[in-house]
Image (cartoon, rainbow, N blue to C red; front, side, top):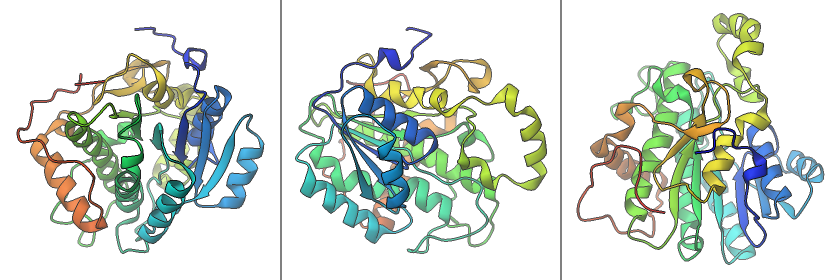
Amino acid sequence: MNEEWTTANIPDQRGRVAVVTGANTGLGYETAKALAGHGASVVLAVRNVEKGERAAARMTGDVTVQALDLTSLDSVRTAAASLRSRFDRIDLLINNAGVMYTPKQTTRDGFELQFGTNHLGHFALTGLVLDLMLPVPGSRVVTVSSTGHRIRAAIHFDDLQGERSYGRVAAYGQSKLANLMFTYELQRRLATHGSTVAVAAHPGMSSTELARNTPAALRLPLTLLAPLITQRPAMGALPTLRAATDPAVLGGQYYGPGGRNEVKGHPQLVLSSPQSYEAAVQQRLWAVSEDLTGVRFPLAEPQQTPSFSGSATTN
């Protein structure tokens, strides 16, 4: 693999439709900007339409804005219906938007904010537009996770919404672990349905607005270390862009920075935590997510569960 993969490696995207959530700032902005710059018709799916319009005005190419509030399943359904009315195909769905380390809050549907936004909102959106992707050769669902999926992370089925015990770091870890488990289970189900694949990525340590809720005890040390351990959003977006566009990518793979501890550097194929590959937990999370969101995917569950190590399946 090319260890110095950059936006110069992105193939021509003309004729492709890409939907990027949280694309008005940070990693999402850089992802959308690069895709539009290579010819894709890009939709910025954002909560604040005014900010989205300003972001679109700074990009070159065919860029439009779609209102999407991942903290509201009604908004997710409305956005999906709008996308369906505007497009007869989606080539790339980039599940990028997210919140991190928020104080205890809930979404409009009563879900813990980080789990509800980062996982359930994207789970629902994907399920509601997936049939626009299944017939499209080379279509991909790319979900952005984090190295935080390793930190105090587990899927707490007995307290998914943090009602009995809440810690902002652990809740973030759960949501990012859920992103990976969703990707791997989605790929398992996609394996017998056309050419759509599910891939995951993470940005390493990037200097974006996402860190604004970092606990006070960590804020000063991270600020002092920032020049050494963080990279610009344009670099942080590269793993997502590689997962979305590199012809060599396989379903079920995970891309992140290739530097030490995956903190920074050019994107490479990486592995997630051992627990993220636990198929039984992936399947249980899928079932719970369907129940909580009311969204059913247009995919039949495979009869057998293949063993899965993360190096992946089909393209």
